[in-house]
Amino acid sequence: MGLRADAARNRARILEAARAQIARYGPRAGMDEIAEAAGVAVGTLYRHFPTKADLISAALTDRTTRVVDSVEAAVDRVHAGGRALEEITAVFTELVDVSGEDRAVKSAAAALGINGDDQAQQRKRARAGLDRLIAAAHEDGDLHPDVTSADIALLLTTMPGHEIDARARSRWLELMLRGLTPAYRRDRDPAGRNAGE
Amino acid sequence: MGLRADAARNRARILEAARAQIARYGPRAGMDEIAEAAGVAVGTLYRHFPTKADLISAALTDRTTRVVDSVEAAVDRVHAGGRALEEITAVFTELVDVSGEDRAVKSAAAALGINGDDQAQQRKRARAGLDRLIAAAHEDGDLHPDVTSADIALLLTTMPGHEIDARARSRWLELMLRGLTPAYRRDRDPAGRNAGE
DNA sequence: GAACAATATGAACTATAGTTCATCATAGAT
DNA sequence: ATCTATGATGAACTATAGTTCATATTGTTC
Image (cartoon, rainbow over all chains, first blue to last red):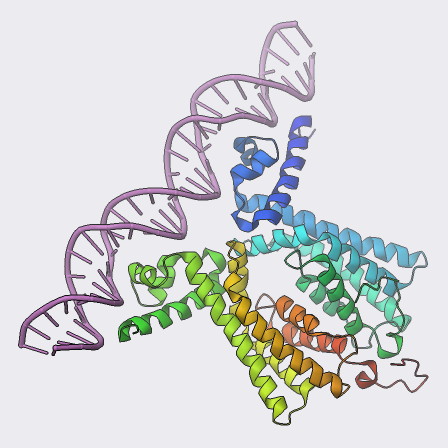
């Protein structure tokens, strides 16, 4: 059998606290502070994550997992009859709303020189899901002809985090969607998520 | 008044080295390393910049200055008969090409909790320049009607740095420009044009 | 409920990196 | 050429934050 009950609970609490603290203080978030926020002693933190890099790496994997899940859920909905562009928009909207914390973790990882090389598998899954979404959207004629899944991945990667406010993020999303969709569809508002001024 | 000749030279070298080291190693770039890269002793570095925050702040101001200069040069060219959208594009292109280092400095500043509050003046100048560029481009009908200087500022702020390669940056630029320009300039729709603006 | 292994604790240790300062060197002025 | 104020040097100091480990606690098994 696996972890003892309290150990599993603590592990989850630590990851949550780590994300929160890093979102608040960036890479400067201390191990002591994270432990305290998790209601745990430093030693416990180190039992679960032998090093700070390991901790941030784990938090990063969590984030990537969430992105992949989001993409694959969208694929399922398209499979069930949903319109691809709407689902793509939904994925972006969800991630833009939620990803302030996650972006912080990612940039903290970059700042500390952590490369999530064990993410290859997940990246592959995400790319596969994106490919299906993009193909479906192209069939609907809802995407500019030259848009590829690499473009979507690019925009997901460079998506702004909480360094700008919610209104600006939503505006960013709108401008970006304009760049993806063909001209003759621009007057539509596919997902009914127009947040501009 | 003024700095002694060697002091001025050293100050410039230090700023250059700081930018380079931070671009390479992020916020982890050490004061000792920066000093060595500048060909100077640590003490000299501290004579010019009493604290690491001061150093990064100064490097940040340099960056902001460059952006402002770029914008104002574009304004001048428009004044001399240049087409506004072309000049806006030129500004973006120049900054996307050059700003890998500068973005690194900026995110390092963020990671270390440095707020460039003394940048208000420069920010004001940049905004003024942008306003003129945007107004001119609107007169040409070259921008989507609802695009404001805040949008341009938003995109300048969230512009990707050297965390992605040159090709991806150039693609990012293309997608963003599509989001800014009106539909009827982007492509034609022989089947049935219904994008009325 | 006793026994044991797994887990938690947190003060102490250590490594890293920012900062200081007594001393030396030199640009610029007379 | 001399002088001195400004600047440069870098070993030493210190503060911060990551890590360890001897000890105490607790979940789990029989």
